[in-house]
Image (cartoon, rainbow over all chains, first blue to last red; front, side, top):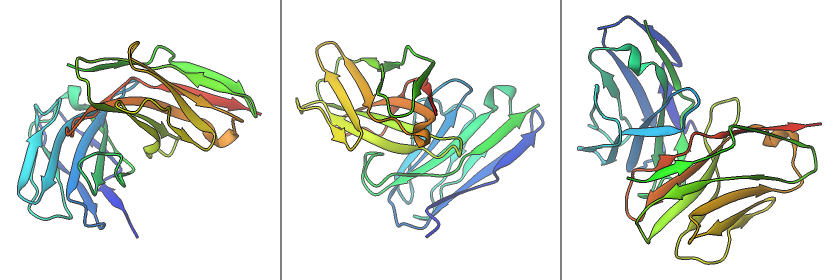
Length: 114
Length: 114
């Protein structure tokens, strides 16, 4: 029972590079989320999805893109990395519309943009 | 916009004693949810306790309880009989009813000392 799996765990990017953060869950959850956590701060919602083919912006979507072609996968794409995107990124999934409903978080991806 | 404030960046408590973490929030909504999440060094986010705003009774989960003061927009977490495993960052979070955008406070780092 893997839960929510994020890859990679760590990554260093140069300014202007692109990358995709992978997130997969094996619990058949409809709802998936991407958060970022800056040092000394709480989590901020980047994008979320309520099901395959449906995505929506959260609080801080600029500079990111997402897709949800399957129920299991919810990748987050950074097209032109900037130092402001240095953060820890968390993917989460839940059965219902609220994060507390059987909510599971991944272990996080620490991204540094230099 | 909703904001969540945790005014205590760091706290410490002796093992077996009781500690209270503070949280205030700002909203014009009447229906909403409040949460406390624990983030241990593993970075995993773990739901500790939740409270529905329409419920007057304070939520309790084993050693964890809240003091919910709706008029004052206050939502403190009390940890009784503190254990070494309670050492973690604790985040207070707010979510409007039927909304997937959860807003987090900056967190309180709790250290339980033996």
